[in-house]
Length: 282
Image (cartoon, rainbow, N blue to C red; front, side, top):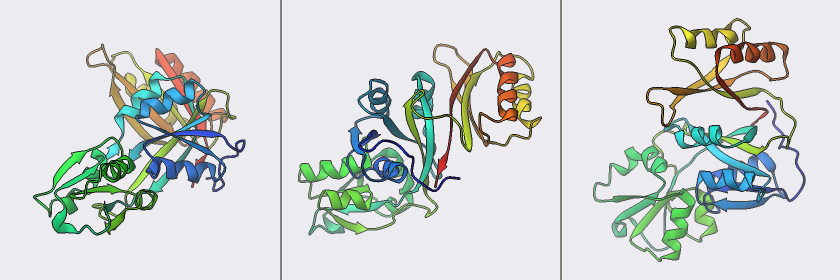
């Protein structure tokens, strides 16, 4: 596991979903360190598009949370866009209840945040039955909106960075249901941007609907002692009851075992896409 940042040219442009103070921006800082140019994007698809159209060299997207699970929209985007995963990192997520200065609990009637953040703080929010939960496209964006609109009767759930950036007050820290709240992020780049290879390899593949075919597909890795750390299925649009399988392997694509396993899988899978082989930055 690599502890150092990803070595890229200074002033590289990095797209992320959300507003300044978003957790995705924090993940970008962990991966690239100082000297990057951050480009906020409204949606995850905008991040992919920014990298593909060369408005940014890299993109950072969340892919999985320990409390809320997989972020399915981003799995689907990985299959759609011709980009490569070039690194992975994870971030401890601490949610905070953020308000205007001078505002206390009695004045709050609404709480804004991303749906995943609201879900991750459900136990805390259940103690305040009168609070209306309002879904927003981004945690930090909800703080910005509350600040820009002067919403003195509302709160937002977001990072401490977001509270600092927009000059707001943290009313309660660490309101997530479980302190073991981590999000895994992937770093995207155009293919060939960085050398391929590292601790993990991610793939997506499709199979014919035949008895035992998924068992056969998984066995190509088991026979070579390659550890499968995640498998996710997603429906194929326009093909009812057919699926794509996303898989993470603890193996370098340049290894003899991994290259042989993938060659064997191609014999079974009509569709196979290598999403990336990359370092894990901790």
